[in-house]
Image (tube, rainbow, N blue to C red):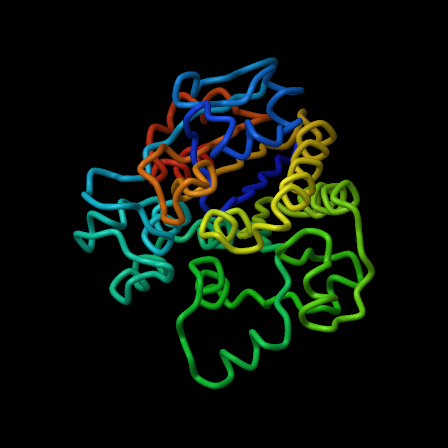
Length: 300
């Protein structure tokens, strides 16, 4: 039986305190947690499990002082290395220049492609992204760099129209409002089902969601309940409808931030990880920090 792996990366989501004022998961509720795991994870209760679903913390500090950052955190996840230790600091939002060769050699997409398997990055990019890279600028996210290093084509609006990709905010709303794209609005449920279908067409699939980190930094605050609800419905649909017989789903983050809206910086809280489906318990048992996620996935 052919197996499929989906890595859903959530930027800036940690497991925080049980605080109904500053932790949005407690303040607004999150059906994915309460319906599947029976409660909302917290520092006081960071390990949750039920019938093939596992939620657990992963250390994001990796033994290096300071607040974890996206560049090193995402490099650690996608390349399976202790990136902050390599450069002796946490660094972000983009990967430090000396980490680019590490990403080129060890990124998770390359692992699958080298084995003649199908690897796919679901996110689509707007025209302003292509204008940026065509201008010669090179400050790109870890996932974008991985795609470039592997010669993987970037999805555009065309692929979103065709149902072959997703915009980074799930519903297409920001592409419509801020970028004036004539994309149809889609529901979080439809987006999740599209992601499930795409996952079943590939050996390894990745999708990146970054609004959680933006919200944690104090952006789009007025839209927070709506954005959180869309993310909740998206993840809930994904976890309740994917094929648990032949698919592994791993949801993870690079550092804490969103779970504590009292501050606008990253946190020292452990990163959130959820594993479900094929080999889910093994992933839970083998991941203590974010640098171990890649090896846990590729050893399935």
